[in-house]
Image (cartoon, rainbow over all chains, first blue to last red; front, side, top):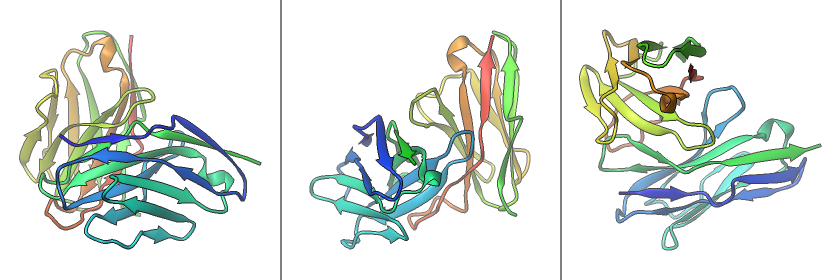
Length: 115
Length: 115
C-alpha cells in the first residue's frame, strides 16, 4: 500500500518570503500522480498543483512550484512571494494510476504567514 | 457556479442516534466520494460511487453506509454514531476514475459532533 509522509506539522513564513513544504511517499508503482491540496480554515479543499510521475519537468502554477525527485520519492512544494491568503493546511496526496481515482493523503502541514 | 455542496455544515447528534449527511453536485460528475477527516489528521477515503456502483474501502466500518439516488446526490448514513465518529466528513466528485488524470473537487465538509 502507498503511504505519504509530511514531516512538518507546522511551518511559518514571513509575508513575501519563500517557504518549502516537504513530502515523501512510498510506492512500488512507476506511474502515478502527486498533488498538493490547500485547505483554508473552514473552507473547502482546493487543488494547488499536480505532477505526473512520468514527467521529469517540475510542475509550476504561478507562485507555486514543486521539486519532484522520483528516485528519492520526494515531492516538495515551494511557495514564492508568500501572501496572507496562503495560510492554510496543505496536504500532499498520491494517486495510483491503477486503482481508480483513490487519493492517499499525508497528515498535512499547517502554514502560517506572518505580516 | 458549478460546485459540490454539503449540508448541513455542522451536525450534532447523540451517541447511537442515526444521522445522515448530504452531498450534492452540479458538475454532473460520474464519481462521488466520501472522506472522513479527524482532527489534525489526513482525510481517509470511506467509499465511492461510480455512477450507481458502490465501492467500499476494506477498512470502512459497517456502521457507515451510503446511498446515491441519482447523479446529483449522495448521502452518508451513520447508523449508530460513536464518539470516535466525530470528524469532518468531506464529499468530493470527479468526472471519471480512468487512468488519465481526473481532478477531485471537494465540498466544504460537514463537521459532525457526537454527544
